[in-house]
Length: 292
Ligand SMILES: [Zn+2]
Image (cartoon, rainbow, N blue to C red):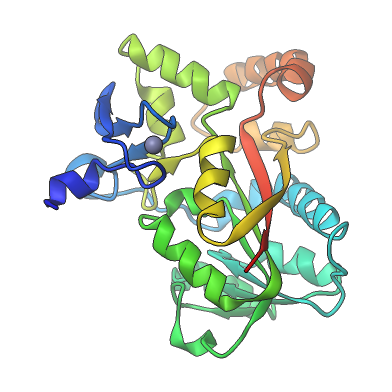
């Protein structure tokens, strides 16, 4: 198979992917999977923007809230106390901190050394390596989590095979990530078709150090994961926006005119019930159980 055939073969259903609105974007007409070529500098640019840990501090309230939701849901299926969780792509360890509050033993992997350093300083068990790594070959985990990480992975099928091997029998896999089912994604695609692409580029994190390489739906993600020895047991969604901390999140962008910030803030307050309860959610959250 030629390289081009490999690039354009859907990892979920083997169909041929088609070009879609942008030269760096491919779409599967059969299962709806979207794939980007942004791992290539040719499309993503030579000097990507780095996402520093301080830049993401303002997301803390939302992240902690969502991490607690994930772990509370998991606790319906597994007693968390003393269980060992591996958080892949853990950044400075915010999920590890919440897992420890739930009395879990928590290990994280974060290859970006300057981001990992902050978590290590705070006493978290973080290894500055990518997954899989020989330093943890002998450890079997009860739970493996991908928090806003799975959409950045270039070879998800290989990754799932490694996760399977690294989990105990009856172990759990947790994945949360932005989805093609979401309202914001659909709206961005809609305006993208009319040639206005900044919202799509932002969603894919084009021009950033770690762009999104896939966008999944509920259905194609579970189909892909279940092919690798897992069973979907929880299919839910997480908040994209929390009213608590929203102002500081909007106001974080100092380049923005405060009047515009105010208008955005008030608009979100007004549409929030619609976003939260009526329109399809933008972050999906799955829990899988390892099966034989
Ligand atoms: Zn497909």
